[in-house]
Length: 448
Image (cartoon, rainbow, N blue to C red; front, side, top):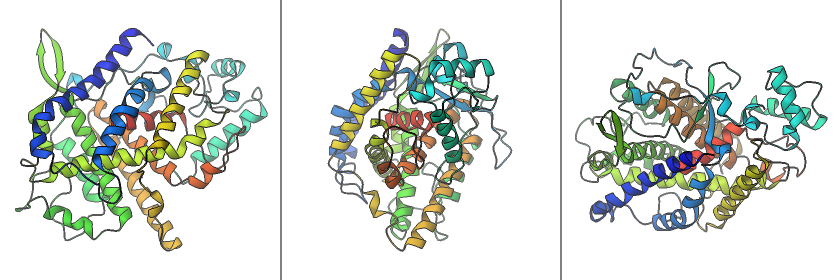
């Protein structure tokens, strides 16, 4: 990775830190409301802050600079499946600059999206795949083990365990994107197109009771004289699983809004844009007074989202600890360093003493629990499809990535038995992660 690329990444992380430092002036306003134990778990905000600041944040930022996690393949041309999208962003900062394939490491572009084990990435196989130009094909030159892996991956892709609508990476419209060169930040995309996306997510997918008339979108114009607190009373009547679902979507929304506030387009000087913290925008979205008490709740949901993704990382560690799994880019030395750093992060996540207990979910009647899990999975999958309705390419990129990251976390949390039964030296038949899922999971966690 170039020095310039590393500087850009560090600068991006510094912007988020700078926002929090600047926002310290608001601590007297929000401190009393943004502290203590989170609802539906036994973890407190202060413990999460300390754990992330001193253990996780420095390492996760370093990891995301590595080539394996830097390149993400995405189809930004998929049509909106729900309405005719007429709000395509024409602002230049909405544009995503695709990465020329010549810049993508050979080991990433030469294999299928699931190819990350040493056996599946033998150099001769890469050459054969390059010559055939059929990246996902199973041909006679592959070893039996690799054939088994490909067949297993194809079978798993057709399973019912996905929480997201996955892009077809073989589509000509799917392109590699360098995430370091296309950071998540405010682009100017707003208005009816953006409102319609979030309203659809909240109104149609968050299990809203009929008695609730105010839009669930926290930034939508309020109806009536809600004081913020009354708005949340509807959550009390929902089961734990549906409350968790809403908090995750709210936390995802809060994460996106926080990034937009931290990297806001402030001005253009001599034709060069300048991004930085926008305190006014942050207060509009999160200040207790301006949001009638809802702002701290949104931030608490962001902490809850962090906790869920943290738990997923701790649960999936055995999958990556196997010798068969190699985060393959073609650079042997860098690949080894990347895996070592990832395993260090996993060890840190397992040391956190107050993890969310996913076993508290779907713990009732087995048949009812299975039906409820499927209902939540379909709702979340629907939200992932809504991300194809975002009119701004850069917003769509990060919306799809963060949604896929959270969907991967949920997939992990509810695959405990399959992860426990993973074979050490052969492809597993019950649980697999594609490279795209791995990249999305870690980048989503790093941006939470």
